[in-house]
Image (cartoon, rainbow, N blue to C red):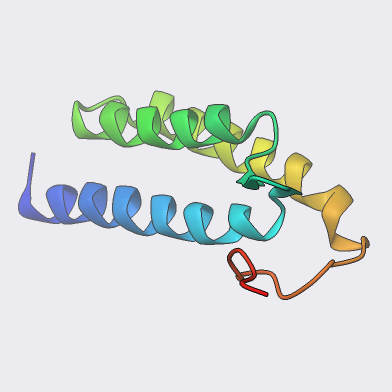
Length: 97
């Protein structure tokens, strides 16, 4: 593996995971006990994570397929929430009243 490949994998995992982690918080279910991830979110994270490992070990085509599947699942989870009502600021935590 070349240095460019190693940097690619590091950025792929770091940025892909970061973008997904921050954005899925916006579509999380709000319950009286806090926020709960939507069903399928963990699988989307897992697909992205597996794509990084596949790419790391030379499985470029497998990695690309896993990467695309992870982001397509993310999109499927996110689309219904785009037109919906946001009950309060997206990134707010528990209210202390």
